[in-house]
Image (tube, rainbow, N blue to C red):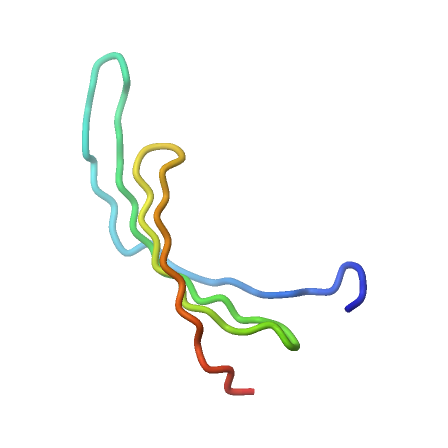
Length: 70
């Protein structure tokens, strides 16, 4: 591996957006769901990622290793 070598490429899309709370002082809380496909370069594997983010920094993610078809 060379310094600066590309390890993976990720592409995805948002599958849902929901407003979960509106508060006059705390502001608006949202839930965002998305899926992405991570394609590994060279010997790095491919993954499929499903994630849900609530608020600012609360994200839950599930990744599945995909069979590398190269």
